[in-house]
Image 1 (cartoon, rainbow, N blue to C red):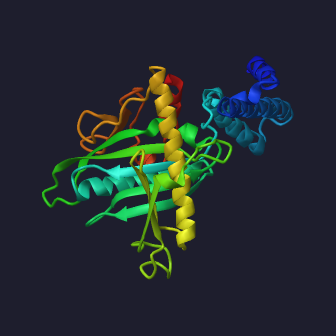
Image 2 (image 1 turned 60 degrees about the vertical axis):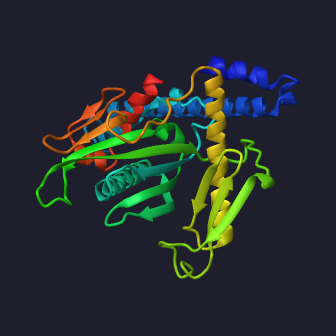
Image 3 (image 1 turned 90 degrees about the horizontal axis):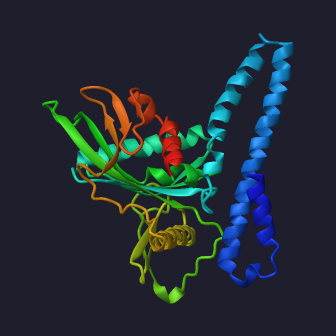
Length: 330
């Protein structure tokens, strides 16, 4: 990693660096990410050496033993630090969950997924803000957009994109029949100002309307919700959870910039014949992960083969093993 950073330093010192601003920004972001990763690894090495000394002096001290266990968990995660190499991997993320066909069953499953990712974010110390949410007709949610802020949130979450399948005994069927439900997950990086995304005002159609959910005393009294349509791409983003039209517009623009950035990444990948797999229809056979709650307990990732029998823990946010396996595969 140090040799790679040294090579990047040479490139950033070239006099023609800013002849191509986009390439320069990408190069500097990559260098910054690697330097951050190297710093974390060196800190981990220093903590290890300190704990070795402490353990030799007090091998039965409960505090020392607890610190060793924590260090072990950190070391396990540190093995994958070098896998966060894309410019946006260090950023926060927007996560979107959409219920599939199936009405109440699918909408309840979408809500279960939303709680799962919120708990995962909490476990990592990330903030998880609801940007947009549409409640289900009877129970659950039709869709939800989270803004997850934290170090490498996008890098962790980017492989969660796809269809998630649930098999269980339906809580909404009096006959107790087994039910299969689907929901899709999409993820975009939370693009900061260091990534240049050009948006022309004439390419935007901005509509306002009345909010229809939680949000305080202003909800349903003023046209504070905002819908922005990017005409060239057809991308539509909405926000209604902030307290003012100005705040909703600002957040909607952040999401739009992130969507356009992700679109640009996909275009570049396609040009290099390494595009992401197209998002499949939300139905049987297209899932990336199966969550079976009946007749047995098993959560299995179709892509990596990682499986866990403690489905309750997974639905409570225990997702790191799935994510790390997907990162290792990339």
